[in-house]
Image (tube, rainbow, N blue to C red; front, side):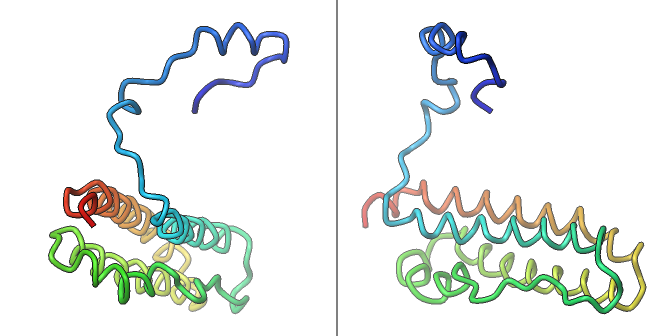
Length: 149
């Protein structure tokens, strides 16, 4: 978060005093070509959020949320493989991506079988896997090999 909500009258003073946090200053810029990759990865986090809401609001046998046309998976099989196959984080991303889809499906399947507690018990691990995926993706995009392509 950059700032808490404030009255419009205070905005100018806040802006004059605000500085970029130190941890932001050390970040490399992401190549414009990789924005669509980041957006597709964010779709996974949104998908997990949809699953969480599904467990809270759906009746058994309601259709589970699906991540249709997974753009991140397509990137991993195509451009990602061509550009990053040798990078250590790439193989981790491949495995994590597959695990995330399997685990998300497992959560929904368990819920639909009436195993609500078992389904909910998988959510923290699912969220952790998505967080790890983002860490691998960050490593990949900030790698030296990426800046050289």
